[in-house]
Image: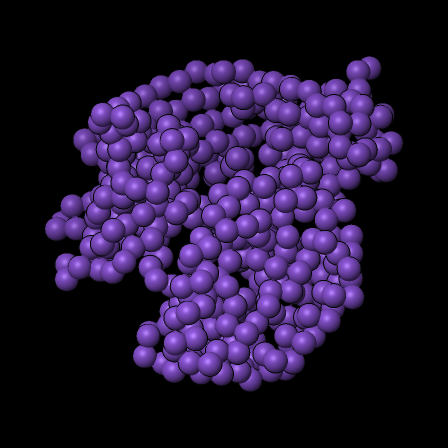
Length: 424
C-alpha cells in the first residue's frame, strides 16, 4: 500500500474538477477536500475517503485511534463570532489629548481565545503548533501582521489550512485583553506582562503612546503614512472593553476605507489590453463608481469576481455620494457567504452574484452523486452525475438576471429537501 513520507504530497482526483492534495507534514496527514477541512475534530484525528483509499482502512484507523467516521457529508461547525471591540472614525473635531495612540496595522484582525485564533466571524485561522507553543492561555485581541504594505501576503498565509512554514513571516501584534475586566490602562499592563513573560518571537505587544494634542496626532499620522502605514488608532483612557462598535476606539486615516460590491469588469486598453481596466463597483445605497487604481498585474489578470465584496480607499464623497479617488485595497475577508443580493432601483431588479457556483452532494447507501449550479448573468448551468465523474450538463437562458436568480433559488431549495448537502 503506498504511503506518504514526512514532507511528501500527492494529488488524487475526487469529485471536484481539480484533484485534491494529500499531505504528510510532521506526521499530520491532511487532504484539501471539503470532507477533511470541515470536520469538527483536531487536525491530527481527521481523515477522509481519499486518505483511506491511499493508506488503507486499517492504517488510517490505527492513526486516528478509533472508529473511522462514515464517508458521508462532512461535519460542519457553526462558528461563534467573538465579541470584539470595533472602531468608529475620528471626526477631526474631538480633542485627542491624553488618548492612547498606536499604529493602525494593515494585517488580519484575530482573536486568540487561549488555544486558537478566530476571525471576526468566528472562523479559525490554523496557525502551526510551533507558532503558538509559547502563547499565553488567556484571551487576547490583536492583529496577525507581517509588515506595512503586506496585507495581501498576510491574508494569503493565515487563511491557509496546511499550517505552512510561511507562518514564520507572521507575528501576532497584541493590543488588548478582552477577558481582563478593567480600564484600558490596566488591560494594557496585563497584556504586555503576559506577552513578555512568554518570550515568543511570534507574539508582541503593540506599543501605545499618550497623545499630547492634535499637533502630536498629526505628526504621528504623517510619520506612519511616510513609512507606508495606514493610520493611527485612538483609545479613550480609562475605557472598558465592550464587544461592539464603540466611540472609545477611533481610527484616524488620511483616506477613508469602505466596502463595495463588484458588479462588472471593464476591459483595459493600451498596456492593459486583454486584462482588467477598471472595476465597476456598487455601494450599499446603489451608487455605482469605477475603481481603476491599486491593482497589481496579477490582480488585473485574475480580478475580484463579480458579486464579491472589495475594500477600497477614497478621499471623500462628492455631493452626489460618489467616492473620490477610489483605490483598490483587496477582497473583503471573512464575509458571510451568500448567493446573491437583490436591490430595487427604479422598479428594476438587479442581481449581483456573490457566489456564482455552488455544489451539492448526496452520499447515502449506494448513492454517491453530486449536483452543481452556476449562474452567469442571465444564464444558469446545471451539472450532475456520480462523484468522481464529470457528469452531464444543461444550460438555461432567462430574460434577465432576476429571473435567473429566482430559478437558482428554487432549484437549490428542491435539492436541499431531497437531502443534498452543500460542499465547497
